[in-house]
Image (cartoon, rainbow over all chains, first blue to last red; front, side, top):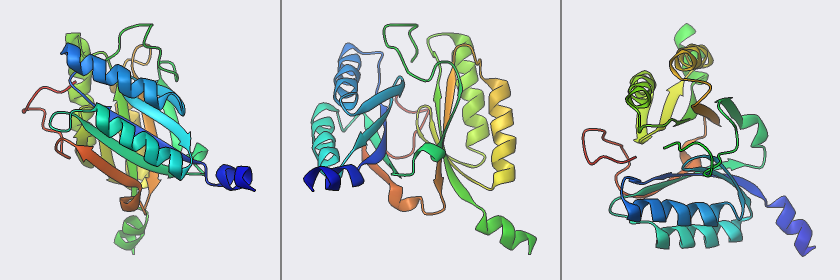
Length: 106
Length: 106
């Protein structure tokens, strides 16, 4: 029952992070945000993450991210794409999965 | 009737643009993409735009953007947030409207 409840509550949350990566501190915050987000999904652009999680996981992730970022300088936006998210997304151009070890894209 | 049809078809489209802004050409493409997107909405992060448009306007904007970007290097993602978009978005941290004339945020 618990598993079923969790599966039916799974939602897609899009997270976009605006940070100044010309500073080492900014780069480090982006790395830390990315590390947390990819536990729940994938990095689709340098600072855009698509995470599949249930409401409790989202609350936990949100708290963690908001401890990492510098709220005076950075911003985070959360977009709730719901469970019917696949038809809401379209990609154009370079590869769909962002590879931070590949070409440097800022 | 035409006006009513258009108003009821208005939807929120989130557009995220991944581009290497360490090059002058990349910076220029971002400026051109931003200029197009803000005709229909606002720039909420350096390369994240929220646009309110009807399907015909979206098709036109999409064509324009895809002529601007370098598809080998950049990527665009479109997220359809629909008409009930206000409850789907949450912002945390620095100012909600991105000001490219202000602090440089990459």
